[in-house]
Length: 127
Ligand code: FES
Image (tube, rainbow, N blue to C red):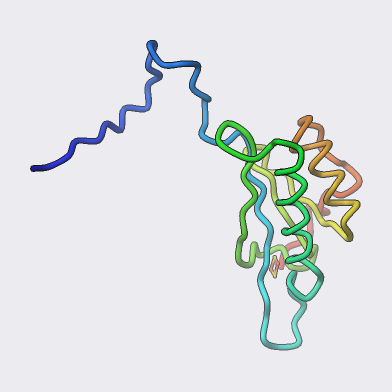
């Protein structure tokens, strides 16, 4: 016996208001650690920032379907701006320094949809 799973993305008029996307926003943190002397986000406190963001998102009640997902990522190829995180669907890149920067990203962008301009990764910075 085989199970049938529908992949029809159209909304079901009989279901409660389904979110347009499964998560409203994703924030990806580069946690890349290099084994050589090259700079990497992990060497600049990325794990602490990721942990802080996850905790703050949860504490603010923002975590879960229809809301925010905080994800780990490997190298995002913008190492020169590191440590970096990127928020989708807006594709906004942040270069953060400390926990207060993370708190501001959570409160302003993830909660209220307002980009934190002072933390934007300069557009020319790549690898
Ligand atoms: S090591 Fe973080 S973007 Fe490359």
